[in-house]
Structures are given as structure tokens and as C-alpha cells.
Image (cartoon, rainbow, N blue to C red; front, side):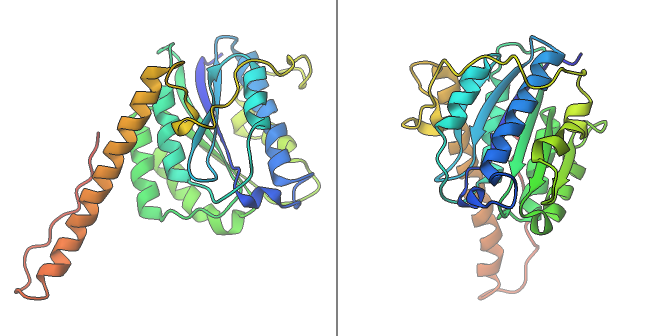
Length: 270
């Protein structure tokens, strides 16, 4: 079966306290994370899964790529619900984590739980989707809770990231079925090998999420990834600031001068 490195991004915003999914939106994610990890690692024992959160002040790496579910479970249990979600930034950080995977043969995939309003506009999401596609990263969305508000934006993202139908949008409205049951019958799981339930997974053990470190990555444990994440985010902020100034400049000139040739908005394709 397919050998993959998968980063799972969970939503830990305040919206996850809602009880419209059994038992809460957050707990429904936890069950589904277990399902995804089991499916990926049983389909290919050399596949690895990592975990991130996207709420609070910003994204945090809870567990780097691993085959040990204990580390994933520890990361989930250490997660606090607060703030709003940061979808675009989290996808970028997940992409960087995948770039630094040890086994370069592994295909790259990001699975994102979106259970709160997506604040990014469609234009920015399309740019990010094209960047992920260029870097050969597949992206799946599990769209729940605020599906009425988010579906159009997520559909546009999937439309632009898709390559050979390798990315999927699974929309799950509230109802009698568990979130994990719906995802289990979706392309996110059904494309993997058949697997026997959710039993037999080890108890929680291993690393603790580094909540005191930038992006949750301890530089003493993984200095290369920590440095790459920090440098990449600084470059991204500089690029966005440059774009903002480029977009504002023509507007300022038209106040005192005759209309001039419009500058084209240029995106850094790094």
C-alpha cells in the first residue's frame, strides 16, 4: 500500500466545546484521529503520522512524524481549547514538517479538521493550495460544525490543490452518526487497506508536546525542524508585507498623479 507521511491538524479553538457532535466537537476529533492513525499505519507499517493544533495564538506541533500512537495520544491530551483557528498558517507549518521527514520516499499528506469559521479569504487559500500542489503535498479537509460557512472556501482549496484526485473534502453535518463513522467510509480512509477496528493500539507514552517552544518544537530535540519552521515563517511574513506594500502603492499614487500602469501582484513562489 501507499507509503505516506501524514500530518494531522486538529482544531482546538473555542468552537470545539460545542456539543452538536457526540460528545463534543473536540472529543469527536480525538476518536477520528485514532481512526486515521490506525488506518495509515496498518496500511503500511512504515508510514508515519504527526499531529498539530491550529487554535490559540497559532499552530503548534504536538507530535512530530512517528509510528508510536502513544506520542499522538499524549499530544491530544495535552491540548487546550482556546482562541480561534489559524488554518492557512497551520497548513504551511504542516508542509514544512513534512518537508523534513526522514524517509523522503514517503508521499506527503495533510489532513485538517475544520470545525470553526475559516477567516482566510478565498484568494489567499487558492494561492496556498497551488503552493501545496507544487510541493506535491495532498490535503484532505474534514469539514464539520461550521460547514455551511466554510464549504465554499474549502471546495476552492481542494479544486486547486488536487492532482490526480489525491485530495478530498469530507463534509459532515451534525446527525446521529459519529464523526469517526462518517470519515471511516470516506475516501480519506477507504483508499487505505482494510483494517480490523480500532483495537490493539498501545497505551499513551513517549514525548510530551512542547507547549513552551515556538510551534511546539523543542530545538534541542529537532534543531533542524525548529530552525526551518522559524525561518520559513519569517520569510512568509516578509513576503506578505511586501505584497501589502505593493498593493497599497498604486492607490497612494493615484491621489496626486495621473493614472499609471497598474502593478501586477506578484507572489513569491518559493
